Image (cartoon, rainbow, N blue to C red; front, side, top):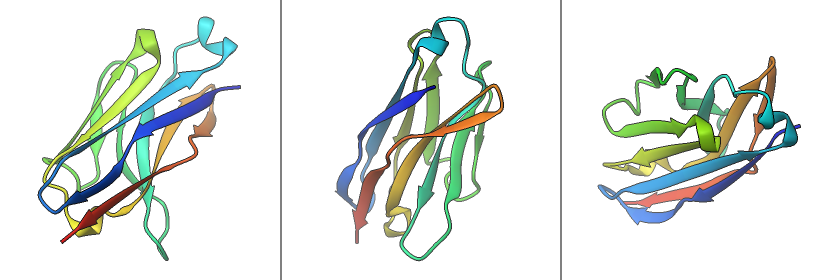
Length: 118
Protein backbone atom coordinates (compact mmCIF):
# COMPACT_ATOMS: atom_id res chain seq x y z
CA UNK A 1 0.00 0.00 0.00
CA UNK A 2 1.05 3.57 -0.73
CA UNK A 3 -0.36 6.63 0.98
CA UNK A 4 -0.08 10.03 -0.68
CA UNK A 5 -0.14 13.18 1.41
CA UNK A 6 -0.58 16.50 -0.36
CA UNK A 7 0.24 19.99 0.82
CA UNK A 8 0.03 23.43 -0.65
CA UNK A 9 -2.90 24.83 -2.54
CA UNK A 10 -5.09 27.68 -1.40
CA UNK A 11 -6.45 30.85 -2.94
CA UNK A 12 -4.68 33.29 -5.23
CA UNK A 13 -5.54 36.03 -7.66
CA UNK A 14 -5.20 35.58 -11.40
CA UNK A 15 -1.60 35.80 -12.49
CA UNK A 16 -0.34 34.50 -9.16
CA UNK A 17 1.57 31.36 -8.28
CA UNK A 18 1.13 28.37 -6.02
CA UNK A 19 3.17 25.27 -5.30
CA UNK A 20 1.75 21.84 -4.55
CA UNK A 21 3.72 19.04 -2.95
CA UNK A 22 2.97 15.39 -2.44
CA UNK A 23 4.84 12.78 -0.40
CA UNK A 24 4.37 9.04 -0.75
CA UNK A 25 4.60 6.69 2.23
CA UNK A 26 4.51 2.94 2.58
CA UNK A 27 6.78 0.08 3.49
CA UNK A 28 6.66 -1.15 -0.09
CA UNK A 29 8.67 1.89 -1.07
CA UNK A 30 11.72 0.54 0.72
CA UNK A 31 12.18 -1.91 -2.13
CA UNK A 32 10.39 -0.28 -5.04
CA UNK A 33 10.61 2.98 -6.96
CA UNK A 34 7.36 4.57 -8.00
CA UNK A 35 6.89 4.53 -11.78
CA UNK A 36 5.07 7.72 -12.75
CA UNK A 37 3.92 10.43 -10.39
CA UNK A 38 1.62 13.19 -11.38
CA UNK A 39 -1.17 15.61 -10.74
CA UNK A 40 -4.78 15.58 -11.86
CA UNK A 41 -7.52 18.08 -11.20
CA UNK A 42 -11.28 18.10 -11.06
CA UNK A 43 -13.40 21.22 -11.34
CA UNK A 44 -17.05 21.26 -10.21
CA UNK A 45 -19.25 19.50 -12.73
CA UNK A 46 -16.30 18.30 -14.78
CA UNK A 47 -14.37 15.08 -15.10
CA UNK A 48 -10.97 14.59 -13.54
CA UNK A 49 -8.25 15.56 -16.00
CA UNK A 50 -4.51 15.19 -16.25
CA UNK A 51 -2.42 18.22 -15.32
CA UNK A 52 1.08 16.78 -15.61
CA UNK A 53 3.04 13.63 -14.89
CA UNK A 54 6.70 12.71 -14.57
CA UNK A 55 8.45 9.38 -15.01
CA UNK A 56 11.00 7.91 -12.64
CA UNK A 57 13.65 9.01 -15.11
CA UNK A 58 12.49 12.62 -14.96
CA UNK A 59 10.61 12.84 -18.23
CA UNK A 60 7.75 15.31 -17.82
CA UNK A 61 4.49 15.56 -19.74
CA UNK A 62 1.88 18.29 -19.51
CA UNK A 63 -1.67 18.93 -20.56
CA UNK A 64 -1.91 21.51 -23.31
CA UNK A 65 -3.64 23.89 -20.91
CA UNK A 66 -0.78 23.82 -18.40
CA UNK A 67 2.35 23.52 -20.51
CA UNK A 68 4.54 26.58 -20.20
CA UNK A 69 2.89 27.69 -16.96
CA UNK A 70 3.28 24.67 -14.69
CA UNK A 71 6.43 22.73 -13.84
CA UNK A 72 6.44 19.26 -12.33
CA UNK A 73 9.42 17.80 -10.49
CA UNK A 74 10.16 14.83 -8.27
CA UNK A 75 12.76 13.47 -5.90
CA UNK A 76 12.89 9.70 -6.14
CA UNK A 77 14.92 9.29 -2.97
CA UNK A 78 12.26 11.12 -0.97
CA UNK A 79 9.26 9.80 -2.92
CA UNK A 80 7.97 13.31 -3.47
CA UNK A 81 6.50 15.16 -6.41
CA UNK A 82 5.86 18.88 -6.68
CA UNK A 83 3.94 21.12 -9.03
CA UNK A 84 4.93 24.76 -9.43
CA UNK A 85 2.00 26.66 -10.90
CA UNK A 86 2.59 30.10 -12.37
CA UNK A 87 0.35 32.53 -14.24
CA UNK A 88 -2.70 30.95 -12.67
CA UNK A 89 -6.07 31.67 -14.21
CA UNK A 90 -9.63 31.26 -12.91
CA UNK A 91 -10.05 28.21 -15.12
CA UNK A 92 -7.32 26.51 -13.09
CA UNK A 93 -9.67 26.45 -10.10
CA UNK A 94 -10.18 22.83 -9.08
CA UNK A 95 -9.35 20.16 -6.56
CA UNK A 96 -5.88 18.88 -7.39
CA UNK A 97 -5.04 15.23 -6.78
CA UNK A 98 -1.63 13.64 -6.49
CA UNK A 99 -1.25 10.35 -8.32
CA UNK A 100 1.36 7.61 -8.14
CA UNK A 101 1.64 4.41 -10.14
CA UNK A 102 3.45 1.40 -8.79
CA UNK A 103 3.24 -2.15 -10.04
CA UNK A 104 0.25 -1.24 -12.24
CA UNK A 105 -1.70 0.06 -9.25
CA UNK A 106 -2.81 3.69 -9.19
CA UNK A 107 -2.80 5.53 -5.89
CA UNK A 108 -4.47 8.85 -5.15
CA UNK A 109 -4.11 11.58 -2.60
CA UNK A 110 -7.06 13.11 -0.82
CA UNK A 111 -7.03 16.25 -2.96
CA UNK A 112 -6.21 19.89 -2.25
CA UNK A 113 -8.26 22.88 -3.32
CA UNK A 114 -6.83 25.54 -5.61
CA UNK A 115 -8.95 28.63 -6.13
CA UNK A 116 -8.00 31.40 -8.54
CA UNK A 117 -10.01 34.61 -8.48
CA UNK A 118 -10.19 37.13 -11.29
